[in-house]
Length: 353
Image 1 (cartoon, rainbow, N blue to C red):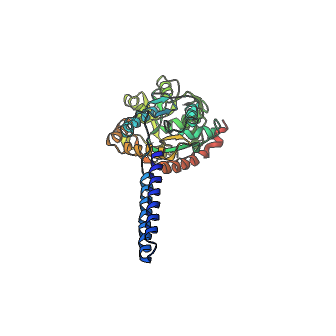
Image 2 (spheres, rainbow, N blue to C red; image 1 turned 60 degrees about the horizontal axis):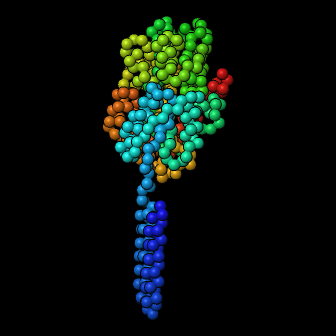
Image 3 (tube, one colour; image 1 turned 180 degrees about the vertical axis):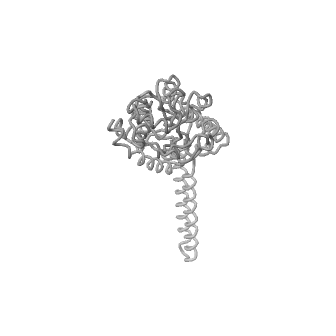
């Protein structure tokens, strides 16, 4: 930045000197005065051009590794998606992006670590819509406006309601009927204050049932509990239980999307089965609030290239059944706010538990 300022100052001094010399040498003639004025204007244009060139110079970022905080345990879809994005962003940025899993308290421990870190562009948060739930439930007192969004990179229209093969029901209708016949006995495994908690209370409210909502933990813990028949129903992303579905150990009751996902279109939506529940996730990267826009924009530009990479798209679709969608900082901020307003309609239900 100092170099750019010096270049601009030198250009201004040169232009001023040129204008003064031409005015002094040509003061005896009106024609000469007009010529001097013209030359001074050209000199001013040169100064403006130098200033514009200086403004367009790229910042020296990044020069070191960018730490990516993932506020959940390793092994889940959030962790996998963060590693996929880092794999394709590292060549664009020219630095490494180590993934650091900081789990606990529905993601708030990792979120707080990023929120209070130095706003220098070398610590960022990779998370999804669940980031908005803790404030709604009362666990924390801030929302995503305490961060600076770098962009959205992926959308997951793959959230399933899943049971195990010994639960006693194999369809959504059978599950809802069983829940109505025996209120409070069917266990829904979730994480208190998180996205699964929201889906659990929304399921109770929408279906008119009473479930036993039990805090089990993140996706890895929920899958292990369901595989061991230690819980009855969970919500989970398709890619994480694909193998269990293929072996018949798990049974998909519904996908919580507007339409069937073409990557696994044999699974019906909850909506087509009479249960109006649509819940998806968007994955984003955010920095501490005071991070300079120039840094965020440069990071976001690299994200846009990564998301457009054919390799990234293929892996996201085939391995994780995700939709690759890039939103720049402004678009991502607006989209997150619209999703918050939707999720916030469940505030009273979540806080009444």
